[in-house]
Each structure stands twice: as structure tokens, then as C-alpha cells.
Amino acid sequence: MASLTLRQHMQHFLDHLDALRYTRETRAHYRSNLREFVRWCDERGITTAQQVSFPQLESWQQHMVAQKNRHGRPIAASTVIKKLTSVRHLFRWLVKRRHLRYNPARELALPRRERRLPWGMLNEPETRRVLAMTGSDNPLSVRDRAILETLWSSGIRRSELKRLQLSELDLAGGMLFVRQGKGRQDRVVPLGESARHWVQRYLNDVRPRLVWAKDPGYLFLSQQGSALAEGTLTQIVRNALHRADIDKPGGCHLFRHGMATQMLKNGADTRHIQAILGHASLESTQIYTRVAIGHLKEVHNQTHPAERDTQAETDNPEQNCLPKRRGQPDPPR
Image (cartoon, rainbow, N blue to C red; front, side, top):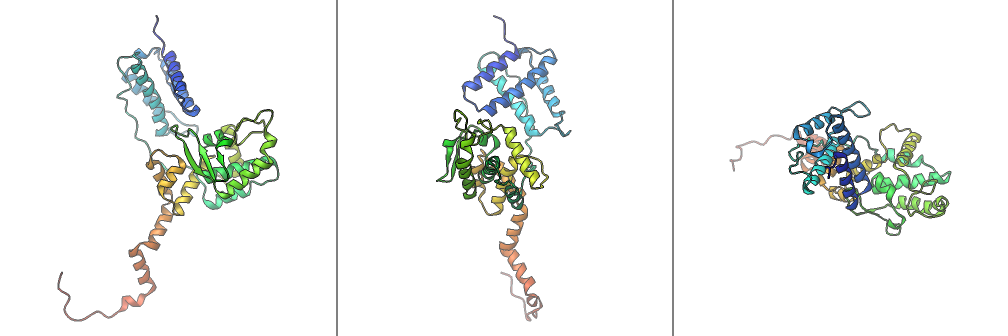
């Protein structure tokens, strides 16, 4: 029996991920990353897994680092890490299945992950302006307002909002049940009063008009009665930003980042933010504290005892003009 090609091994690995019920988004990322790698190998005459060596993988890594994004800037370290991780998992699977004796990707070093600030977010006045400019003059406006309110209130990801089912909404309890979020983790997130009001209005007045022959069960529907595409959700946000005259890059994540920062400024605990956002690590959540540092400094100035003493001296300058005491100084203690 002829040995399988690298491309065939890749397809079997992707089928393996399907069998393990990885989320659609995760499978799509693996597929995209591995196809890019296999195409790079094909261009260099590397057609089997046995031909792949550690130096070649290092060349692949250097090739990725040299790539540019659509803005002409180097691609983010997090993107490189995801691509390298996909390849490492493929070769680890090949060794486990005894297609290879040695894993050439085992010693492949991942670049250090950058802890960069979120590149786009909305402050509270901007968020309220975006919501206010999304009116209720037609059914789709009501749907879009319900979507924006849900994004801001719950902080869920675009992919999670798209998959949200009617059965995963508890309006009476003010909760959303997010199934199989990032990392295949389920979680429950709060849904505030304003968001519940608009979602209820959407359910009463709009959603029944969007359902065609068969109800697909998704909470938010397109005009065709199907789940909203992720690109459509992004465009809904972009249109709302345009109406509010806010020129900031990004889409649905603007509300997610903004919600986290705004809650921190209002005194929320970082671990509570972590639970709402569905971060596996607290480190991912703590980056928002850097955004809120201005507010933290203000709180520090108002509440730290030393800062309060300084303020008291400033308010009572006469204390600084008191006569100096005479006599011998106190002995050292």
C-alpha cells in the first residue's frame, strides 16, 4: 500500500477533529492553517510527512514571521502561534497514529505571546450614542438594537452570538447559556434589563416575521430566516458606528472590550469579568486593567491614606506654618 501524502494525512487529521466534536470555528482555523502549510510544502517539493524536517519547519516559521497583514504590518505573534500550534498538533497526531517515528515539530519554539491592549473599544458615552442612534423605525432596526444591547450587556463573542439558540435564553432570569464557547467551554452570562427589554421586543414583534417554513431555532435571524452570518453581524456594528459618527476600527469585539473596561472602571472584580468573558486564564482578563489605569489612579488618589493626607495638607496650608517645637529632640526609639 502506497504511503499517504501530507495532504491526505492533513484531511484525516481534520476528520479526526470532526469526530472529537471540535467547534466549527476551531476546525475552520485548523483547516486554514494546515492548508497554508501544505501548500507551502508543495511549492518546495515536500509531499509526504516523512520529508518534513525540523530545519524546514523553522523555514516555515520564518516565512510566516515575514508575512504582512492587510494593513501592511507584520502579522501578530498570536497569529503565528496559532499557525505553528496547528502544525505541531498535526505531527503529534501522526506520531501517535504511528505514521511517523519522530515528531519534527516537537522542538519547534513558539514566539512569545504579546500582551497587547485591545486595539479597539468604546467608552460608555460612545456606547450609549451607538445604541441611541440605532432606532426602532423598522423591524430590522429593532433586531439590530437587540443584537447591540446583547453584545454590550453580555460581552459574548460574535461567533457565540451567531450560534445562540432560543432555548439558551432565559429572559425571566436574565441569563444566556453559551454552549461550546472558545475552548469548548460552556458558561452562563448575565443579560441586563435594557438588553432584555429589546430582546423581548424583538421576540414579540420581529422574529415571528423572519421565520419562514421551519424555525431554525436561532435567537437572531436574517431576513431569509436563517442564522446571521458573522460578516452580517460585523456590518450591523459598522453601520451603527457610522450613524453615531464614531470612526474606530473593529466590529462586535468593540462592545466586548468596552464592556470589560467599563465594568472594571465601575469596580467589578477581575475574576468576575473573567467568568463573563469566558477567559480560560485570568491573564487574558488582566490586560483590561491596563486600559483602566487612569481610573485606577484616580481611585488611588481618592482612597489611599497617604494621598488623602497630602490632600488634607493642601486644603489646610496653616498646618505647614505651625511654630517649631523647642527643646531637645525626642531620643531615638
